[in-house]
Image (tube, rainbow, N blue to C red):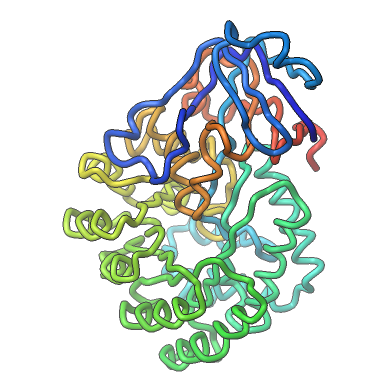
Amino acid sequence: MGKIIIQNIKKIISTERVASQTPLCGEQMASLECIEGGYIILNDDIITEFGEMNSLNSCKVEGARVIEASGKMVMPTFCDSHTHLVYAGSREMEYRDKIKGLTYQEIAARGGGILNSAKLLHTTSEDELYRQSLDRAYEILRFGTGAVEIKSGYGLTAQDEIKMLRVAKRIGDSTPLTVRTTFLGAHAVPERFSGRREEYVDEIIHTMIPMIAAEDLADYIDVFTERGFFTVEDTDRIFNAGMKYGMRAKIHANQMSNSGAVRVASKYNAISADHLEFTGPEEFRSLKESGTIATLLPGSTFFLEMEYAPARAMLSYGLPVALATNYNPGSSPAGDMKFIMAIAALKMKMTPEEVINASTINGAFAMGIGESHGSIAVGKKANLIITRAIPSYEYIPYALTAPIVDTLILDGRELDINAIR
């Protein structure tokens, strides 16, 4: 790797003189620290210096590989803190049902949805699952994502959940992506436990969690707490069991109703509560008291044609807000963080500064890596996007589908965007 200098940068976006220890909250998200006409110095995989070009002297350049960034901007890579990137096949036939007017719940009740993905995954070998998922990993890299959380949840048996988490770990080992993994056995009740949900919860607690912990496969534990899926009581039991094995809570909360999920998330100091479409002041208070990050997934809301989460009310209340793709085959078949930012700006009225902060530094904190990722600060990981020549950072969420990534630097290594598979 060695020493790299990126010079003549039009604008450096999201700089911090001292690396933050906490996510940005409320009105803090409305501003971006930027440097006009700057440089960044990388040593191996760490940012060691940055500043204005007039402070870059020849002795600093000596022995370094120089990257010319005239007319371009540099920003942190995106941190996508909620995905279901590992899955088998696709579910475009359900898309036909959706177009005909069936709801997400109605499709699930007919044996579609998560259960359909579980059937496909069960018959797919680990190597084939890895091959399919690796394609998606390279896809999100091309879009500028450098760190990603990957959930299980399409296995619904101990063996298949473990298979998913092993694949997620392999993606972290074999690509430049920083990967965090989440066990989501409580994603749906499998057919073999039809009408016996609590028995399936027992299996999660007494069989799955110990087996997954024995292989050190999951950083976090998650539950889809929603009417027709898992109750607050189920969630409490599962989180209590996961905590004993060192798995911190994340939660699918209030996507389709006010399910009470935020209350249990706050009880366990969940690192994030995700979705939150049906959320109000009482839940805001709980989230603020527990320090839980509100992670919004507007790609799902867009695809399912639902009401969007009240982002402006959350920001006014002073909450830390993150954005993520929820990349999955059923409700958000899209892994482009830039598109998610555009939806958040258009539909949830978040400003360009807010969506950039929500997709970088707060996304990093929502997967537990905020002290090393998500902004440009001395001592942080050298995970950077060098953009194409763009007029302003406001252009990023404005230009809905225009690619902005020219070059990626991940762990201090320069990647040709056109060479990423």
